[in-house]
Image (cartoon, rainbow, N blue to C red; front, side):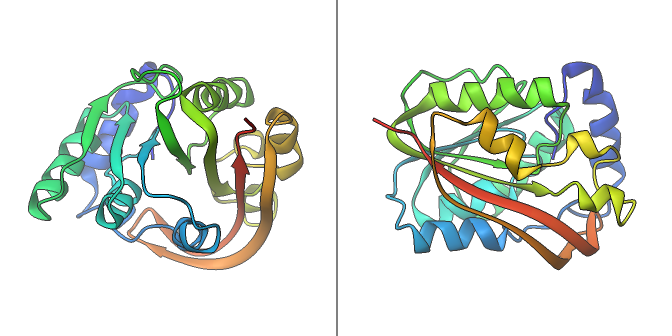
Length: 209
């Protein structure tokens, strides 16, 4: 996943370039899959900012969503497109900053912000952009590392402020209706980039009409 400003693009390019295979694998988050089924999210148009090599976008495309995604890493987007082609999936992918997605307002039924770990001020901009893109009654699914990933395990995004504190996220999305929020301790096996014990924050919100 990459969502940082363009000055970090080279860093993410190196990470994706040196990875053996896909850095975070091709399996989508269990939570995203659960949300689609549990909350009966309608098939429609979906946007995924900071989608990296594209595992979550491909998952939604397999379900029939019309998916567009962005990432700041040219390498990640190139690898994502290659995987899309291999599976004969049609997705829209662009190299772009998650804070400034090049899509029309009120055009998305679903936005999934998955493991986009950026400083709080940038995260708020990304979430505001998501709100701008979503149609009324659209849904935002969000998942990432909980601060305990840093403070207890010494892993994750490196600084606790980059992790997803559910109380802070709720405050940043105050006008939205929270459908669910959970903090879980689990074991990840998502390519070489996500391995071992992990603390996750997982949330879904609905945009009020």
